[in-house]
Length: 293
Figure 1 (cartoon, rainbow, N blue to C red):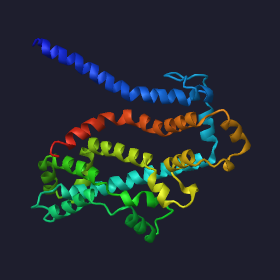
Figure 2 (figure 1 turned 90 degrees about the vertical axis):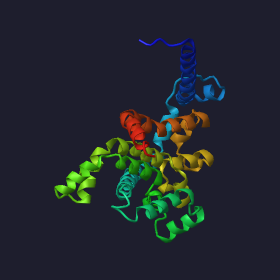
Figure 3 (figure 1 turned 120 degrees about the vertical axis):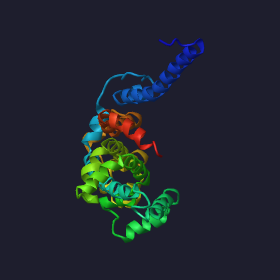
Figure 4 (figure 1 turned 180 degrees about the vertical axis):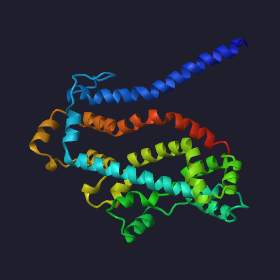
């Protein structure tokens, strides 16, 4: 057994202290926000809430879920996440696979790779993108939230590097058995790339779930807002004329602070529930995908 020197032991102690402090700095604000969301309006306004709810109440959550607009925007967000994930993953897979080949196999690989890389650093800009979305008839449809970002280049690069690490002998054996590239991709490469695909799934789902700006500029009617855009709109410009009597009475029991905390918890919780199941794939996918980065 190798004994650690005094310097190594001191380093370990400070390392544990630093990592513990870093972890607490991430967790404690979240716990504080959760406590505020379950506290009364008076306690939150007076700053009496720490890491535990004061005068426990579910009013903020009841107010959020009683609003039809909230339910409708929640459904639009779910639709966006499902469709966006399917479109993103399909396009990323079919673009990363040919670009993972050598120049001898795919002669135009370098030119196309540079074309994709160029779009990572130079965008069209907000107004040209808006004009394209409008002229193509995508505005006020769910596809306006999906198509403009349908091929995330960063995701493609991760998957491309992952594909390159799969032993070429597997593909050569499949070719000798008569398999074509389409079958090699979907029946060999994709099943072997589950860690990388799971990692990209987390990125994609979280990205679509949290994105709000596209809903603000591409949707003229607030009824088409996804959840994040809806929340952003009622926080910045609340329209009390849209509230009924029950909601106004419930609104008296909550404050902007507790309501905002409850909304943050609502939109954060799905991601927190998904992440533990994806964590093992997430870590292995990021590690393997970066070896040749």
